[in-house]
Image (tube, rainbow, N blue to C red; front, side, top):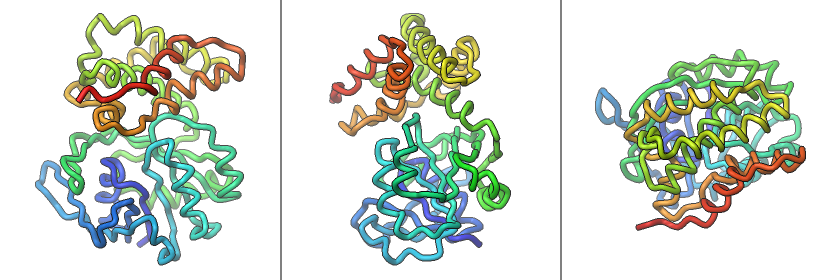
Length: 300
C-alpha cells in the first residue's frame, strides 16, 4: 500500500480520497482546525465513512515517507499548497496536480519542486458537497493522467497502478492538448453560469450562443497559435455535450460567486488573455468576462 497525501477537501479531493483509500493509506490535508474530522461519501450504495487520516495544513511536520501527493485545490491555491508541502517531499515523491483552468507553472516548479516528478490529472468525476463533511457522487467520467516533466514520464506505470481505483483512469502522452480541451469547456460554461446565475443546462438557450461562440473562437485561435491542435467546431460540440450532461448542476465558479469566494477566472479567461498578450493577439470577449467575474458579487 502506498502513502498518498491529498490536499483539499472539496468535492474532487473527497472523491479521490474515497476511491484511493480502498487500497492505500490516505492522509487528507485540510484547513479545518477541528482535530480528527471525519468525512463521508454518498453514492448509489448509500453513505460511507471515508477511511482516511485528516491533518490540518498547519501541522504537516508529522508527514513522512510520502509516495504520492495529489493537489486538488483551486488553481490560485496551488502555489501555496506546494510551498507548504515541499519541505516534506523526498525526490521520489510523485506530485499530481488536479485543478480547473491553466496557470504558468514554470516559476512554481523551478522555485519549489526542482526535479520532482510532476503530473497533471484531469477528471470528469461529478460530485458536490452536501455539507462540510459529505460528498455526493453524482456521476463518473474519464480521468486522464499525464506527465509535466521528464522524470514523471519515466515513472508513470507505477503511478497509474496505484491510482487505478479512480474510475476510468488512463494515461496520455497528449496531456497538454487534453488540458486545453478541458479549459475550453470551462471557458464556455463557468463564466456565463456564474455571471448570469444559471445552471449549466440553461446555457443551451440560444440567447447565450453568441457569447459561447466568441469566447471559444478567441481561445481556440490562441491555442492554435501556441501549437495546440484544437478546433472551434469540436470545442463547441464538447462544451454543449457537457452542458447537457451536467444540466442540473451549478458550475464551480457559480458556487464560488454565490458564496463570495475567489473564483478561478484568472486560470480560465485570464489565462487566454495572458497568453494572447504574449503573442500580440487581442481577446476582448475573454477580457470582458475576466473583468466582470473579478468584480462579480453574490446576488444573495
